[in-house]
Length: 243
Image 1 (cartoon, rainbow, N blue to C red):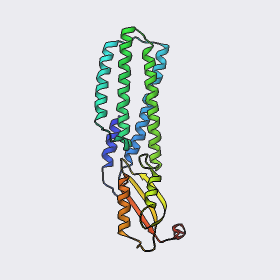
Image 2 (image 1 turned 30 degrees about the horizontal axis):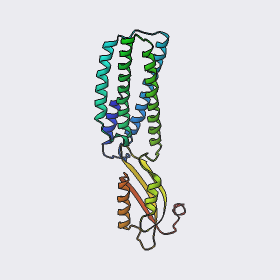
Image 3 (image 1 turned 180 degrees about the vertical axis):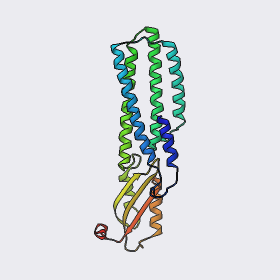
Image 4 (image 1 turned 30 degrees about the vertical axis):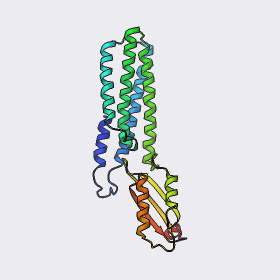
């Protein structure tokens, strides 16, 4: 279910902008990441509750069939997670899907280990202890994912972008006297948008192509592909102009 959510959001995010959705449907990936985080937390809660119940009523683990199934699950989930490559960290939706797979792999590894120990040593308590540990670990990953997903929906600057470094680069651009109204946010997936007001030197025009091109190139190197720049007169108070 979690992977289906992620895949559907990924497909929807590729659709072009239309009508009132002027940025397209990229935010669907952030919504899917939040939904996936909730699913992860629900699964974590179920595993923890079941583990606590098994402390009270231990059950005999049929070790070898469980170990074989867990080994197969571990292999499939690790291979599937590997297919995402190493570039999913900038995409919250893909990270959510990868966390699902890695969480399932961790469960399979824990079940494999506990089944082997239970089969060899006969320790019934190893099963609930393992389940509780896995449940808490997966729950922590879900909390982190939920926090990041809600933060992106609230237009937090993406973690891979350093706003202080962006501001310093803009202030260092030739012909720029001041920088204000700088906003950076994610518009879904790995796409990042920026809007900024730049106070220009008196010798530059209000649409200086060299300055605008330099800003776009500098921001592109920082992973920001959608830039909107407003050039202002030296000393102009845009807040006063708006009123």
